[in-house]
Image: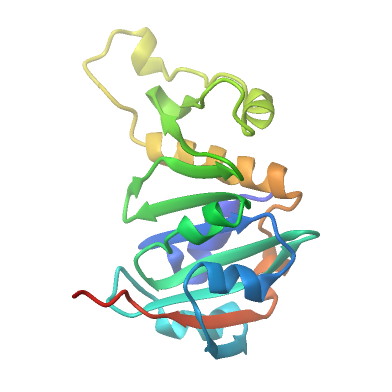
Length: 202
């Protein structure tokens, strides 16, 4: 399996990355459910979309398209992570991975009925509720190997690369569930870049 995070970071996403995997083959429909203005569509590759890369900017853009058979992927190019309420109301299964600088947030997931979080514990231990749709895939990961600092009773309270380990597990879960991991071919494909209008504050 390719190192998915290294590929994404190599594409320029190191300062922040939100990826939303959705179980639907209707990429335009998914974009609409994420709030995209479909009239703003621009078909392009990732390097073209990355000209607009500004994590947490006030202009929200997503690059969305086919991921695998029956799955769509939406990558946030600028602005905040897309709101998933539309996916939840449509009863679609999804996963959303989010990073900001060095911080890796818990994995948001929906099974078509309820939403939940895959939370992080010590050095790559990821916890989901019993019966979660992610549980079978998480069992493949197994328990993380504790670093030497833990066994030696060192004062170190959290290993340096804790977030990286959790992120790689989240990317593994997304790849296993959707049936496709991110690779160089994935990065080279064309998808649609949309603007997502920010909600009007009244």
